[in-house]
Image (cartoon, rainbow over all chains, first blue to last red; front, side):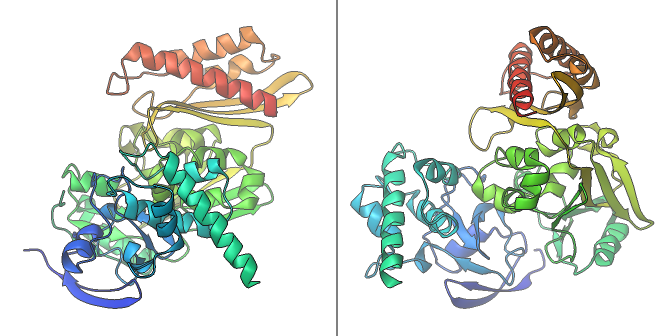
Length: 164
Length: 284
C-alpha cells in the first residue's frame, strides 16, 4: 500500500480534507470520495472532456490530473454552477435549445462552456466550436450545443447590460 | 487506468528539484502539465517511482520579449502563449502553432517545456524550435548550460538532456518575414500526420532566407536545411517549391502506423509543406 498524503482542496466553495494516495486521479476523488458525480468518466484518456472541471480558473480534464497536483486547488464542477431549483443560464439554455440528448457529456460541456464565456463573453459560432473542441458528444451533432451556448451568451450579456 | 504507486514531490525551488533528481537518478521524472506523462503512467508504459511536480517552482513560467530576443519559461502553457500579445507580435508562428496543439483543456495544462523536452516525435514544438533555431537552457547539479534545438534530439524520447537536468526555458531571436505552421491531423487532439514550420524572408521578389522543419515524419523533428536552401535566391516559383519539397522528402523518414502507410505520409508531408511555403511567402 502506497503512502497516503494529506490533501486539502476547495470544491464548489466547500473545504475538503482527506488522506489519499497521490496517484488517485482527481475524477475518482470527486466521484468516489466526495460523491460529486456530475463530472463523468467517458474515455478516461483525456480525449472526451466528460470529466471537465474548472481548477484555479482553467478548464481541466480531471482524468488527467493526480489528486496530489490539485492539493490546495480551487475546484468547480457542474454542481457548483447551478442547482435543480436554480439552474445556471447555460443549463437553462441547454434545456431550452435541446443541447443534449442522452446527457452524458453535458456536465463537461456546460462546465467548459462556462469558462469559455468568461473568457469570450460574446463569442462567434466559430469561437464556440473552437473553444468547445475538447468536448465530444456522440448524440447531438453539436448543432444544438453551439446554439445553446450562443443563446446563453446573449442572455448573460443582456443581463449584464441591464445591470449596468 | 490507475498508475503504479509513486512518491510525490512538490519542491518550492529548483534546488529542491535537483536534489530529488540527484538522489533518485532515472527513478525520478519531473511533471509539468502532465498531459503526455500522466497518460503514459496510467497505461503503465512509464514507471516513475518519484514524481516531481514543478508547479510550485518559482521563475519557470513567463514570456519575455526583449530587444528582439524571446525567452519562454518551461512551465509556460500553450494557453499562455496564445494569449500573450507581445509574443504574438514578435513571433506569431508560436501562436499559430499553439492553436493547433490538442484541445482547449489540454492547452491550459500543456507546457512548452514538456512539449520540447519529452522528445516525442509527435509534439509540435520541437520542429518549431528547430525552425526558429532556438536555444534550450538546461539546469543541472553543475549549473546551467545551453543546447541548440537543432542538436537536442537524438531519437524518439532520447534527447541531449541528462537524467539530472531540467529544462528551464527556450530562447530565440524573433523571426522577421513570413511564417506558417501547417498541420494535417485526423481529428482534434491527435498528433500530426504531417506538420511543417516555415519561415521565409523576402528581399524584393527574391527569397533571402528560409528555414523549414517537419514534425512527426521521423523519430526526431527534421530541420531540412536542403529544403530551405532550395528556396533561397529564387522567387519561390513552382520549380523552387518542387525542389524544396523534393529536398524535404529526402530528409524525412516516416514509419507506417495508424495514421497511414509510408507513401501516404510522404504525400501528406509534401502537401502540407506546399501549403506552408505558399502561406509564409504570401505573408513575407
